[in-house]
Length: 164
Image (cartoon, rainbow, N blue to C red):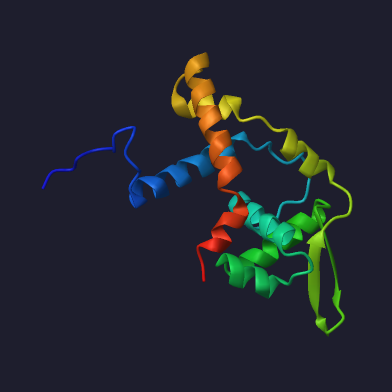
C-alpha cells in the first residue's frame, strides 16, 4: 500500500496530521517567545511545561501541584519545577491550604508580572515567516487568520472536554 501523502486542502486532517501540526505550532510558539532577561534565575522544566501549568492554574484557581499533575498528565516533578519558575517570575502566588497545612494552594498573581507582560506582547511574525520559508504578505495573512480562528475555537479549556 502506498502513502497517499497529505490530505487535500478540503479534507479533514488525519489524527497523525493533526498531532504533527500541533507539534509544529508548539515549536513556532516556542521560537516566538522572548528569552528570559539575562541574569534571571533559571529552573528545570521547559517552556511547554510552564505554559501548560500556567494555563491549568488560570483555569483552576487555588489548586495544588498534585491536582495540576493529575489534570495535565505532567509528572509531579515537572509541575513543581514549573510552579517554582512561575513563582520566581511573579506569575503566581502560593498559600498554605487551610485544610492541609503541608500542601500549598496555587493561584495566579494579583498583578501581571513583567515577564507575563513581555510574553503577552510577543509577536509571532518572525517565527511564522521562518517556519513557512516565506514572508509573502498574502500567505502570512492567510496563515495568521487561520491560526486566529483555531485559537478562538480551540482554547486550553477545550482539552478538558476530551477527557471524561
